[in-house]
Length: 372
Image (cartoon, rainbow, N blue to C red; front, side, top):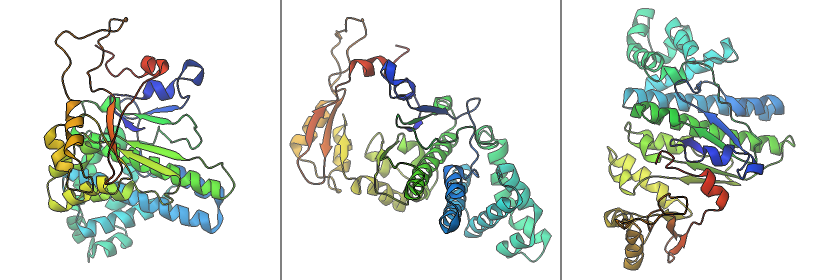
């Protein structure tokens, strides 16, 4: 679970198998909870070191490329609009330089390198003097300074404390509940960074398995709160799509969760809307829980064809509970009538209406309304 905001799955994943849980690993990210260095090459760097040879060289190049992509996304989120093309080039050159200066650079290292005005950077910026370079990079430096000294600095301004383990059959939950009231940009940045390193960890595990250094496991990656990251800045949807694609897709499933099909329609420009709509169009299966008629009409006519009966069925699951709510023996109110009911759609085939039934252990560990 890459980015558990409530958190919904911390107890289920982190509790031992003996006590009914999955016996997985829980990592925490957020102010006072855990930090995330965007230049940390993580599991892919470790895999490159262990494998060595030409494969190791290629993995290291891939990890560096992904660090550049992530920094571009984080800078885009911070600024609220896409970087200029020469700024992306500058970031790529500067990040490559940081890895030649120190094996574990961080955001402070990157800022220092960019400020140094080395010949490689002047060439990348097409600046003919140091004064011209400082002028040309002022906007980019302001963006990076905002990342370091603003709210993002509390999460991205230090070394990583949340390294992803590669061999955890019980799964990994990245708890970001410390960000539940954080600014929208910070939450989006942490989600994207978490997703990126989660996918790279899967790629690293695959390469280790190919080299005979690990036993390959299939992975299911859950990306929740997708809508919180998509609309923060124009062009971000495409970057998210690029970051969350594995290099070796076989054996990897992913679940993208959003609140409504209309989330895509609310994005700021047409290109973003088309790209976001593609998430559902490319999905092998679409799962529809209780949605409004307007939500379903927005989805209908895309790659997901819904009959009138299917629309009526899904909208009926939004019916409110009775004013005299029934209660369990524990005195907790029973869930609303549509809780756990879902319509599974595979392309144009008729939907399969089903209901999720929790086990006793799940009821004990999966309580998303603890305060009530």
